[in-house]
Image 1 (cartoon, rainbow, N blue to C red):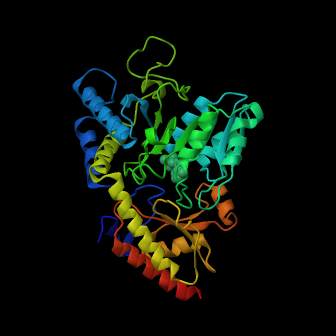
Image 2 (cartoon, protein in one colour):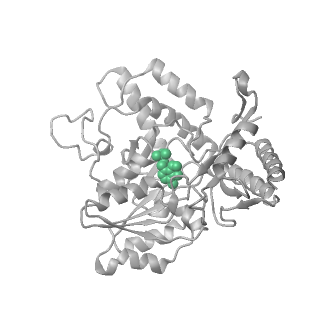
Length: 400
Ligand SMILES: Cc1ncc(COP(=O)(O)O)c(C=O)c1O
C-alpha cells in the first residue's frame, strides 16, 4: 500500500482511497513537508525580510534556501532572488501577463491555455491588449509557419508568447524550444506555464531560453497549497501587480526595483514557503529524472490496462512526450457521474469536466461532454494502478 493509499478513518467509508488527481494538487504530501510546516509554526512563525530578530532571520534563511532550490530545479545559476514567491501558478501567470503587457500590445496564447492564461488575456482586451491563439493538434504539434505569422503580426510583432509546457488535459509536452527561438527572432518575450511540469519533467530555463516561468508549488513539487512562483530572467521588466510593504527600503513611495521585493508586496505565506522548502529539497534528492521515469512507468501500466477495455476511449495523445496524465471517455457514461462512481464505489479520486481548459477540449472534441482525467504522482503505486484498472474492468462490463 503506498502513501497515497489509505484507509479512511470514518466508519461510514472504510474503503481504500486511491488518489489520482495530482494534476490538480498533490493532496498526498511527503511527510517532510508536513513536518516542515508544523516545525515552522512551532519554532519560527515570523515573516522573512521583516524585523531583524532571530525568528525573522530564521524565516529569511528558510525563504532563501527555498529560492535556491527552486533556482536549481529551474536550471538557473544566477541570482536566486529572480525566483519570486506567488500564491499559485495562476497568481504567477497574472503577475507576468499583466506586468509585461501595455495597451496596444499584442499577445499570443495557445489552444491548450488554462483559464489562468485565457482569462487574464480576455480581461486585458478591455485595456487595449489584443490576443491571438496558436492552434495545436491533440499531440501538441503546431505549425511554425502559423506561429511566425502570429509573431510578426504584419510588422507589429507580438510583445508576449505564453506557452503551456504541458497540457493539463492531454498531458502532452509542447515543443517549447523551437517556439522560443522563433519568438526571439521578433524580440517577443516568452512566458512558460510550467504548472504541469515543475517536479514532474525537467524545466531548464537556459536550455529552453524562456524569459519567464510561472509554476505551482502544490502540484509536481508536492508542496502545500498557497505556494507557487514566478522566475523572471535578468533584464526582463515586469510591473508589479501588487504594491505595498516589502520589509526593507520603506522610504520611497515606489516598489523597490530589486528582486524579489519588486514582485513580493505584503506578508508572505511563510508556512507555505517552509513546506515548499522541504518539498523542493525532497524533489531534488529524488531527482526529477527519476520521478519522471517512475511516473511514466505507472502511466504506461495504466494505459496498457485501459486500452484493453472496449468501452474506454483514451484521449491523451499516444507516443508524444508527456507527463503522467491520462484523459479518457467511457462509452455511455457521463464523465462527472463516472468520477463520482469511482470515488464512491472504489475510493478512486479523479477529475471530470473541462479542467479549466476549454480550448484543449475543443481540440479533443469533448467541449460538450468534458472528460475524465486520471493523473499519477509521487505516491502512486503499481498496485493502485492495477486496482484502478480492475475498477474500470467492472465498469466496462456494467456499462456494456
Ligand atoms: C496548465 C496549468 N496552468 C495553470 C494552472 C493554475 O495553477 P494553480 O492551481 O497553481 O493556480 C494549472 C492548474 O491546474 C494548470 O494545469
